[in-house]
Length: 160
Image: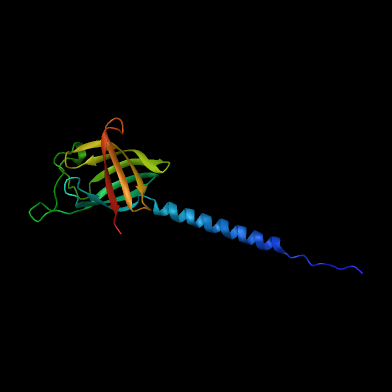
């Protein structure tokens, strides 16, 4: 007499679980990449006072980032819509609200570099790179002349 043992059809179940794990991992990677995008609204913080001074809205066009000042937080005695009097060329005497202060940044690994940042307070442009950190809640903005060693970093906070 021959006894037949039924084989468990385990391989299709294992394949399904493997595909499910891969799908979850890909979804997590996609969500993480979206969270770490610099695109959005960022609060800029004064180096001197530690207070929020403006909102910069960063957008992406043709694989480059552009950042514009969309709001200013001013004291009651200050002009609510100041002009960039120290800026040069086409930006000279333009309203700071609406002014492009970040331009030309392209993706380079986990940061964006190769662009410029304009400081409306002194009208000067600097080389720039940015990096999103802390689960997309902080933006490290480094402006420098020549080498990144000679410059300063600001931390901008994601506006939720």
